[in-house]
Image 1 (cartoon, rainbow, N blue to C red):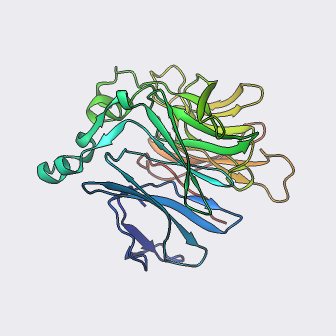
Image 2: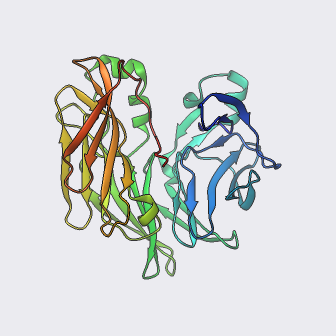
Length: 334
């Protein structure tokens, strides 16, 4: 999966590629996300795809378990399509967080320039939360707030008339340019630091209020998804930095209620995104393990790290005979 609509199919046993996967429907578009959500109540994958035109469209769709046909839940026409790497979801709503980072598809078509060179930051538009009813497909709210940018939603849920959206938020889109290879190779440029923020969308008053959960650098956020997605929760896992100018080199566990952190750090070791795997027959939210692919720059090899998710101590590691390029958004399958 990438942000382009193309999907590659794999053989489950050999992991050989079988070629491009094609949905059995007529839904079209040009830009999607690598963060589909899963509705466990409906047993349905939910995602959206942006179709560029004179009037562009956000097409939100669902895929029922066992099906290869997308069913459109809602189509939202927009004059300017925004770049959105992920989206939020609660029990009853889908939330598109429309940052003021807009795409110029005609410039992209005419110049053939790299995709990110056709993204334009327009803070005067602010950020808009589009709240869509999962069942009817109707938009039930259009919430405006100060401009900010994010790659990753953390979680969302409903409480006392509010739609609550937790996001790793940057003040602007400069993080994208900071991650370009030429910038990283300079070694002395600071990577912008995000905040973990909670946005309260009041359905009755159409007002947005904000709470800062943490000012510490945390990215690639993961949760106990099966148990906590669309529900109130307490633990966020992610990567962070330890005196490294923002380049992630430690794993963290953040406690929302106590605003405290636990971390795992080894000098000259650079972990990737933490993947939470729940233990069987669990009682507590954080019972399980954390999986992370770590680069050991001294041994010049990568290893799979396994942490106890509760106390955040190392259980074991499994070295590979080579270094693996940094990746993102892995999944664990039983």
